[in-house]
Amino acid sequence: MKVLALAISAFLSLSVQAKIWRVNNNVGIAADFTTIQAAHNGAASGDTVYVEGSNTSYGTLTCSKQLTIIGPGYFLDQVPNTQALMQSARMGNFTLNSGSAGTSIIGLDFNGSTIDVYVNDITIRKSRFSSSNATDAIWTAGFINLWYVNNNSSTGVSNIVISQNFGVAIAANYASNSILITNNVLGYGLNYGENTTNPCISGGQNTTLLIQNNIVRRGKIAVYGSTVMNNIMVNGYFDPNNNLYANNIGNATQFGADNGNQSNVAMTDVFANTGAPDQAYKLKAGSLAIGTGYGSTAANQVDCGIYGGSTPYVVAGQANMPAIYYFSNQPIGSNTDPIKVTVKVKAAGN
Image (spheres, rainbow, N blue to C red):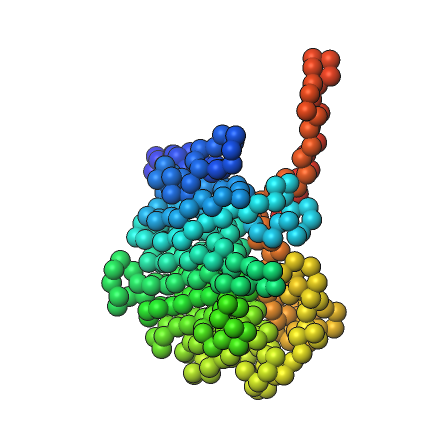
């Protein structure tokens, strides 16, 4: 019993020590920090950092602590009832170094910037990486680069989850394993041309990736010996390279017609094509992607694309937490006429 009591005491002590920090660089707002690097430096491993929307970037980060970093999402101004404040939390380049294993990054706006990963056990979700121009939401793509562990180029990083992101290209630069790439909008930037053969996903011959339920907007899937399933290629290229590929949809003959793959599919027969850039990839009624994913049955349909599978894409990158989407207050009050405040809150994300 003494051992159990000591264990419970240690657990509670660790729980109490973990803190939540607030980051906001808007004028007139009192927050714990105004840059993401300062928040990292002031936090301890195990802490959570909430970054609020702003028109000003929160800068770059070199991370050596295990943190949970959460932003408000993106495309908020194009999706009603998401947040009362519509700005995203813009970031510069991130570098995740030794000590940051277990870090989760959620709901940030990298706006063409890059994350370089030099450590195992990293989760990157619900973040936007591309920058936009007047005609395309992926004018430039931001990158996630998977490197090696502890300056040892013979050991690539492992146990990496890249899920539900928008406008990202991914490069596994060393021999890595247990890399999950799922429910993302992938693409190389339009500034390289609509028919670029630059890779939106690349991996070497000793790298094993599971690539499923993604949208490929443009660029090439250039991987070896990996599993590629339930993806939709709007435009781009695919090299077979001893991959296991099944139940994918291509606008041309990228995947062939065997193993449940579909070729020469008009994307007008697939997507609803309305709403914000990520909502445009919702499946239309009667879509050729409905129920055509790997493992689909009449009783349990599996769809291709980002809104199918076990971790469906979340519109606007909203974190799984309550969101204030309406705020109104009476500007002046008194002892006899108290200030009236109206707040509307809803659950968001998954």
